[in-house]
Image (tube, rainbow, N blue to C red; front, side, top):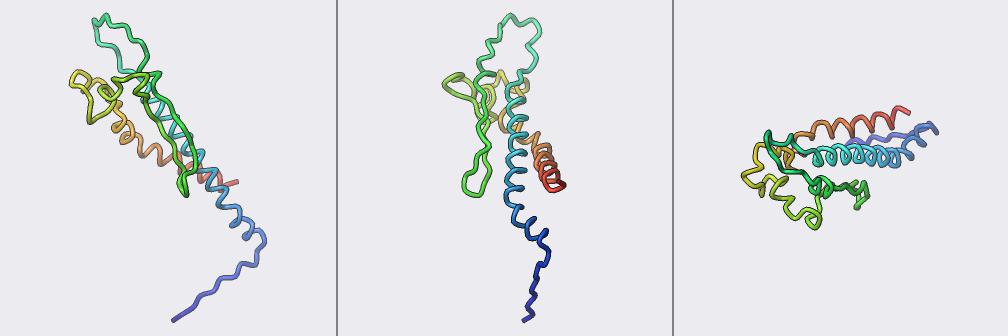
Length: 137
């Protein structure tokens, strides 16, 4: 069996390694904040009103959406974007892909699931950018 030993003689390198966890945490929190802001904005966006419709939008569904976090849960950084069923009890019938009413299909494309799927690569870029920024200082 071969044994490899690495000894770091650089004070600067040791300090950088000691600071890395805090820098990673800062970058992940910033990336999560960016992501929560994006997802919340998208969930609050209404599709154009149907031509000829006389329905007056109340903005209740839009106002039912909120975000919380980022927060640490064990080793994870967690954030939540959600809609209050107390504020808009019909929210799932409009913006949940599995429970969406037929009348909303094809118009309300920003279901929670579709918004997350559509923005996955953008969110990954947010985290990548925040980590690069943190470690390029």
